[in-house]
Every structure is written in structure tokens, then in C-alpha cells.
Length: 136
Image (cartoon, rainbow, N blue to C red):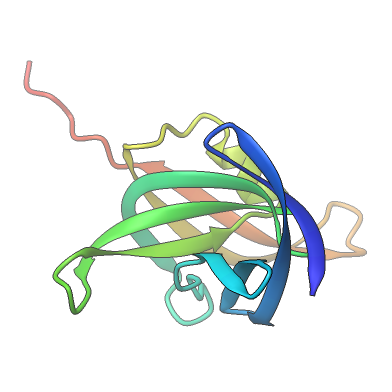
């Protein structure tokens, strides 16, 4: 269990972060869960995710990462659209900088790419805006 500051709605409070596994993170206040993340997009199983960019959160988890919440067209048992958590990395964060919450995007995992010096590999992504083209 790790102590973290979480800012939501302009208010900051210190919460305990309970990392259950790679697919699930819970924010705890005492023994009470105050926020639970959506399922995590597994880009190794499905290289693309498309939907509405619903929310952005920063400083999440032990690595203080950024996450993007994507609402897809698929529905859950309550007939509500499913939302997925997409963990940021340097490449994805650079490509999401100009993305606007409420608009549709497709995020595509392009695989691992070597750095220019060939010493490391990183996860490479492409982000495509899915804004419909308006008739003239």
C-alpha cells in the first residue's frame, strides 16, 4: 500500500493506493474504496482501441503515470458503454497532448521500436482522430 495525492475535481487529498494486479488499481481512504479503475486495455491481445476520449488522470499508481479513459461502443451488463484505462508512456503522451476530451480516437499499438542508438526498445503507438468529415 502506497500513499499518494489524488487530485479530482480541483480538490487534492492523500489516499492510499492499493495495487491489486496489473489490471486493477484501487484508491483507498482507510478501508473504503473511493475510486476503482476501469479494465486496462491489453494492447498485446488487441492492438487497437477506438472510442470517445472520456477522461484524463495524472500521477496514477506507483510510477505516477498518466492514464486515458476511453469509452468504447461495447456495452456492459447494465447496458452502459464500457470504459477502458489506457496507461500512458512517453510516445503515447506526446501523441495525446492535443487530443480533446469528448472526441473519438483510435489508438493503435505498433509494436516495440528500437531507439535511434539501438540500445533500448519502447512501445510505439499511433493515435488517429476519428472526427467525421463534414459535407461541404
